[in-house]
Every structure is written in structure tokens, then in C-alpha cells.
Length: 60
Length: 413
Image 1: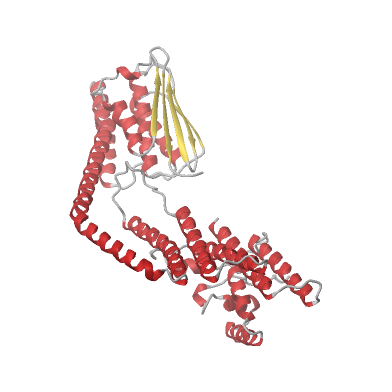
Image 2: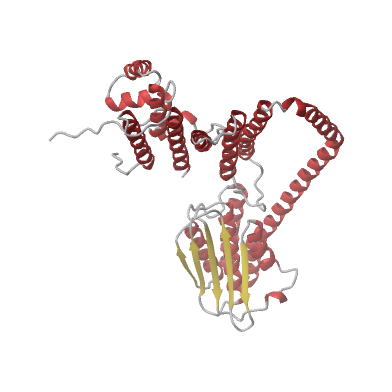
């Protein structure tokens, strides 16, 4: 069966990864300057948010 | 015309997994040997200095497991898992969000120290886990009044709940110990902890005999309560079935065929009740069970009974009690209002509960004036409903008919 319903987790994770990717691109092109600590905070925060959303959706 | 073959869905197969089943899922989806995918994943990880691990973890989170394969792996008799994976995900996620916040604060120049930050992250994770576990702990699905003995699955679920809570408590205690250790305060608290352990040990030795006796008394009291409830249920059933039949036999003593028919029906019903597990006429539908009960009373007492059931519900020990109480209410209406036309039964049935109304246009009565030795109302209707966690309301006045309202809840809708 081809399930075409939107997967909320994939949507949220995809949006977050796109945002992180955009930040990395802007940082590389020197439009913004992100320190190592901020990058680490962003990565950890995104990973944590994906885990929380995944857990909450699995529990439904 | 050629048939279009749909590619296999992207699902992780726990049975084919080395770590999380991500490579197996990709291999199945792409039609490639999972071993090749695994070799490629290792190569990418080495080439990107470990970024492949991050990508693998993300894929593990995002690709759902094959529910059929997971169920096969678990099996129908598998013990309940220590911890619900969803709770761990939320707890670790909250811990990581807490860490992320602390890292951002550090970048802004607000930083306490590592000995404060890391215990804080650990405590946040433990607290989140405890909060999640408290939400999913099994509620008491069997009512207090049930006579069902404690099944092994119930005891196993309670142990699982204890294990689940223990992880969260361990994380929080670990965070406190880490904080104390990092701030060189553990040595100072050692004497306090030793004194506390010695006091707890002494108290346990002193109180052990009393606690043991208390536990045994509680178990004895519970067994006595169960026996009493079983006796009450047996008495109610005999009143509803055998006594009612004997009353009808007396009324129709001049018709031998009718008497023989009543006796045969009662014998069949009693044999079925003694030796069969199912009670509601082997019906799997609550609405059907109510209709069968009404037909039975209609045939035995020769009064018209009209049943209207909206919705349906499951048949279990609660609903069997509901059907029995409804039957008794209809029998009472047939006995005490036989010439008052049709007895109306209206039932609202759902997944979360049921409400049944039994109405007659008889002479009515004052419920408070019913004698103490009459069991029809007190035990067979009100008592039976209360034993299984329900409620029975009797609404009647002399001259205005009678309405019996039976309410039973068994879960959320």
C-alpha cells in the first residue's frame, strides 16, 4: 500500500536540517560568523528537538 | 498491459538489523544487498571524519520500523519492555535541548561551571524520563470490585513500571552525586550518608516483622473480600435465574407444558453458567446481548419489551454485569407492571461506556420503602452494578411508573 500521508517527523526534521544547512552555508560564505560553541549548540539543539518530536509522535 | 510494481516501502526491519536496521532498510528499498550499503556507510563515515554516524542516527530516528516485523520479533508472550523507547527519546531530547541552551548561554558569557552544567543536563534528562513514565504507567483497568484473580501479566506490568521509574530516579540521583563530586562535597557528605544508611537499616530491622504481618493481613483481607464478592455475585445470579423461574412455575402450575419448558430453559441456562466461560449468550456484541436478554424475559413473562440500542460495545465481565442488571430490571417491570403495556429499553453504547434506561408505565413505588430482605433491587441491580464499578439509579413514585438508569464506564472514548 502506498501511504501518501505527510509524515510530521520527516517534515519537522527536514525543515530543521535545511535551516542548519543554510546557517552553515552563510557561515562559510562569511555572511554571518558562527563560533564553534554556537555551531555545537545549534547541532545539539536540532538533534534534541528531533528526538523530542519523534518521541511525542511515537507515543500518539 | 503491464502491472506497475511499487518499490518496497522504506521501513527498518529489526530482524535484519546489525545496529538499527537503516542499511537493511535502504538496501530493501533500492534493491541492493544491505552488505554493500553497510560497506558504503562505513567508507562515508571514515571519509567525513565521523559525520556518517550523525547521518545514520538521523536516519534511525526518521525511518519507522516495520510494525509486522517488530511484532514478530517481540512475539505474543514476550515480557513487556523495561522502558518505552518513546520516553527515552523525549527524555534524551530534553536533556540535549537543555545542553544546547547552556551552550548558548556560555557563548553569551553566562556560564556557571562545568560541575553545574553537566549535572543539570543529567537531572533534566532524568526528570523528563520520570515525567514521561508517570504518564504511561498502566492505570488500574480492572475495577476494585472485580473478582478476577491477579493475573501474571498484571504483576509483570507492575514490575515493568517499577523498572521504568527506576531509570529516571537513577539519573536524577546520579546528577546530584556528580554535582557533589565535582564540587568536592562528596567527601563531606559521606559521613551523613553512612549515618543515614545505618539508620535506615536499623529501622528496617525493627519494622520488618510489623510490615510482614501488615502485608499478610492485607492479603488475607483481600482474599476474604474477593470471596465475599463472589458469594454476592452467586447469590444475585441464583436470585435472577432460579428463584425467578420457580416463581413463574408457581404462577403457571396448572400448565404442565409451560412448567416443563421453564424448567428445561432454566436447566440449560444454569449448565451454561456453571461450565461455560462466556455469560452473555455467547454474544460478542453488547447490543445483541441486551436484545437477547429482553427476548428471554419477553418469552418467559409474556410481556412486550422494546429495545432500542444506539451504538455498540465490547462484551467483558463489566458489560455482562450490565446485561444481567438490565435483565433483572426488565423482569421487575414484567412482574410488577405486567398490564401496563410495553416495557421500553433504551441503550446508549460506546467504546468508553454505556447507559441503559429501562422504563415501564406501571403503578410505580417508593424505592425507600422496599423491604430489606428483597434482593431484586438491592443486590441484583444496585449491588451488581456497584461491584463492577458502575451505578444504578432507580427513579419511581407511586402512580408515575418506574425508570431504572444503569451507567457503566470502562475507558476513555
